[in-house]
Image 1 (cartoon, rainbow, N blue to C red):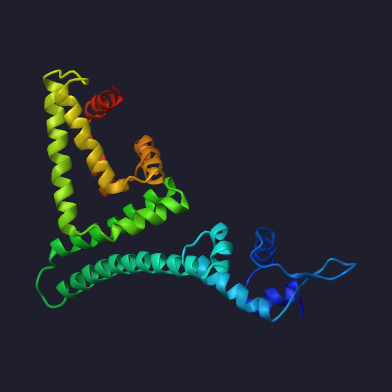
Image 2: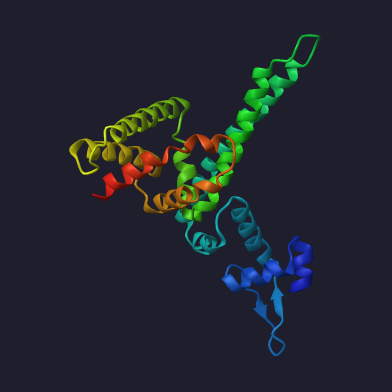
Length: 245
């Protein structure tokens, strides 16, 4: 039997964390009659270890309790987090590889290959761009975005980028010729826009809400790769009218 301070010290966690897990129903200690002191047992170490591991893997605390009760749910959650972490590792490996190639270019008397340094910057900015968008999504939506990212190959990225470029050019042409947003041509452009968005959201309303929040906050986007997502106001105004008709 351990008092809360003893248990926290042995487990390497804070007393505050234990109180929080107690409030959430994740780790319920015994209550000593009369005093109401929290009392932990050896078996609670195993439960705490499960909580800490799942928390480290990025699973929200509110989802951990149900997962620990259902083996199938826990298995699916772990598989999803493994895929997300594998993708994160792939991104970090790409950045590390770019840095190593830049380091090798400095060996010897030859001039450094500045193209390699440009690649280092690009890889690191890609990591930052991935992180800054997460604040707009709920935990569940972020997990789905990360899961869909595993399907996003460089070839698919290039294809989608071309499709967006072509669509924006077609919308700008429609704006220049003063196309009526309710016309058949404008509606066809709106349909293409929706299809491209669905390719990212997978039709998930939570992901769509996060994307809407991110777009509404576009004036506060960071410098770098994020700027490439910006488009002329005339384009967004036209497509908003077209989709609203």
